[in-house]
Amino acid sequence: MRHEKITDRRCVETMKILLVEDDFALAMGTEYALQAEGYEVVKAGNVEAARTAIDNEKPDLVLLDVMLPDGNGYEFCKDIRGQGNMVPIIFLTAVGEEANIVQGLELGADDYVTKPYRVKELLSRISANLRRSKILTEVKIGDEKKEVYSFGKHEFNNSKFILYNEGQIVDCTPSELRLLRELVIHEGQVLTRTQLLERLYDTEDSFIDDNTLSVYMKRLRTKLSEDAAFIETVRGVGYRFTRKQQ
Image (cartoon, rainbow, N blue to C red; front, side, top):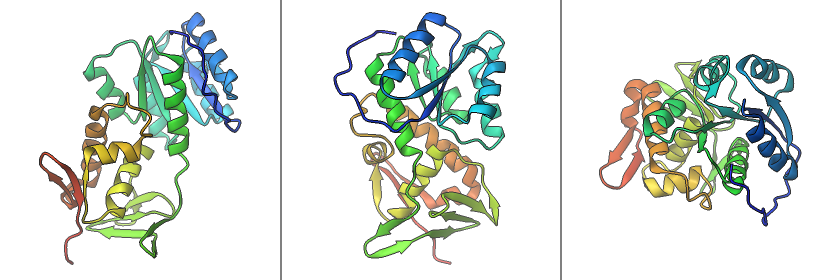
């Protein structure tokens, strides 16, 4: 990890971060940087310790290394999501290849940082993911407040931030639900990929790449099954959500 002086120190409420990293020096440096920003840090050097920390410490966010002594971060991420735990997960990976990044996102991770990472970049991503995890329970569309959007066999409850399929909860990550929310509340409008990225991420996070949006869109459409047809691709521009006439 390349260290640099942090000049834009944010005032953050005390939030707990689980750092799953077996590299002692890297873990110490990262812990120091996080504590300097006001975060409480819980460290785990392997999957077993991380499982215990998830259950006992209830972290607000997880920084997860890919390669661990007793397993790998991908399987651990899959297990977390399989339990219905939607805690934000940021992968720490030394492999910058697209396939590895996509694999992590496909399993439900919210973001990734490639080693060696800069402190400022890591802190910015953490801050963005923590903010995005606090979803507003209600949005305004003009002067109207709308809580529920029904389309096909699905119903998106914006107040509860839950997607249902014929009354059953659909297992979605916060990132997938944020994407769906942006589409449905702008029903009928074409949203460019740039607009979606700016709304799903902080505009200051210029290092977020377009590939992440493609992964989220693919996952969301898969979960919507035939109702994915309500999300139209406007070639060369972006996407539009349009409910068919019943």
